Image 1 (cartoon, rainbow, N blue to C red):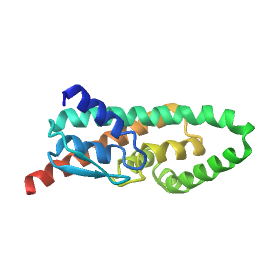
Image 2 (cartoon, helix red, strand yellow; image 1 turned 60 degrees about the horizontal axis):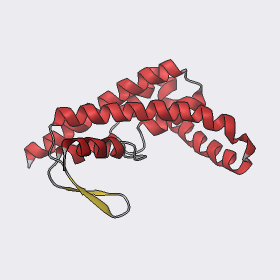
Image 3 (cartoon, rainbow, N blue to C red; image 1 turned 90 degrees about the vertical axis):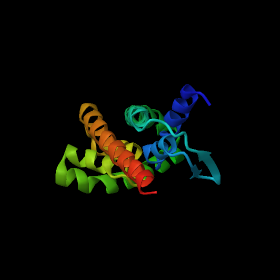
Image 4 (cartoon, rainbow, N blue to C red; image 1 turned 30 degrees about the vertical axis):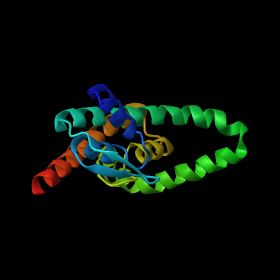
Length: 167
């Protein structure tokens, strides 16, 4: 498989909700098979960790920006579909509850820290949703998103490379 195809796959894996770069980085770095949702699997690409980190952080940062912008579009146009609007409100309220304590305690650094936690469900998707609900400005979210994604990417890369060295 060519390096371009591998990079494209990493970019797309980063867009998987709840997993984001927490899945893509190990797939890019490891040379083993990684289990994916829905009983799928993917053999790792054994790529340079620096390249994998760059691609996945870039993709995840773009994901956050795209989702944040898309929420404004959806919210403005979903009012004509009351049931979908109710579902979106419920989803947004759940994200709000998860993110609000971080923002109240730490401000924008709280959003970045929330994104940086390398656990499923704490990445750009949830932070974009919560920031949208909390009324965080686009500029502030973009900055917090970039910082949080970079920290998460570094942590996941270090953990992945560390696991390789242990075994």
